[in-house]
Image 1 (cartoon, rainbow, N blue to C red):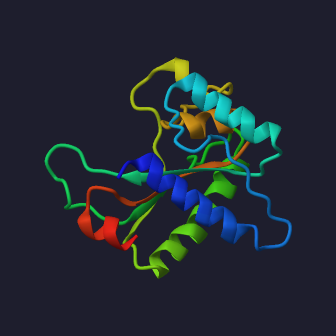
Image 2 (cartoon, one colour):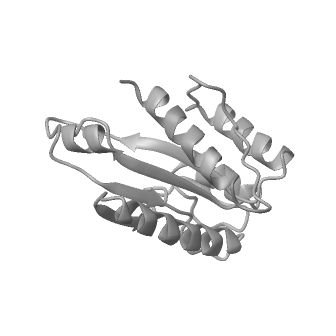
Image 3 (cartoon, rainbow, N blue to C red):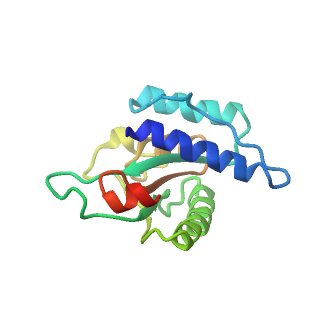
Length: 168
């Protein structure tokens, strides 16, 4: 199975569940089968979320291992904006949401790999925020923070782990 197919199914289940709650509306920033990875496309996703009035942007993914450790890694992890003074509520909201989600994923039986942050490695001012602070590593989080929109990346499970794949 392809990650895009699996994450689309997850997105549909999440949308159906979330919209059973009062005052919740879920909008998509990609279409079925869509895969966006280039920076201009990630910026378009953020702009689409902003244009649709989103309060948060949740990017759904399935993890995979690299370099021969296929099947050994398992569980779920969530990336959030790091704690920075620049649009700081994006971190606060993202961290709170991520903790709630990882707790629910753990209740389903997925191993909790944690809520994580990742900043740009090295000193590359192209990715710095307007206040001069180092940018978040993941483009979707960085572009969303620039738009003052909290964004998180959920890595639900490992697509190349037989147990994760078959159970979740």
